[in-house]
Image (cartoon, rainbow, N blue to C red; front, side, top):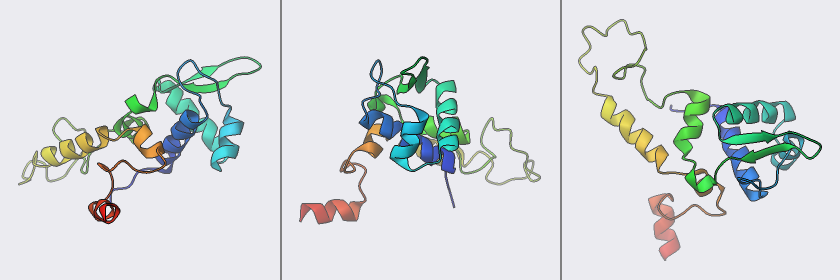
Length: 155
């Protein structure tokens, strides 16, 4: 099963909450303590997530008595793929992708070597088309909703 780490999930939650609280670029700031209380995620975990998000430039820390964190850009411009890569590394179903560093015992005789590349690219493209704003919205945009949910909404 393809699965994202909990830290990636928590990062999306934290980014969405920062946007909801108006902690956008140049806006107000939110403390790790405040984010922890608002999201139900343990404060040490929120602090760790914010540190990583700051390292990759998605949030910035503001020092001082009224310091905290805020987004460096609007969530509409932050693709989900960027958050995933920051926490989980390159997006791929298998380690044996072109240019990958995954060691495989059967690489020299593998019949599907390099064939996963289009699959991995499709997944990366799909995740790049979804933004944090899409996930933070009260309802998923129709373009992201499951086909059955779209059909039911149209009835």
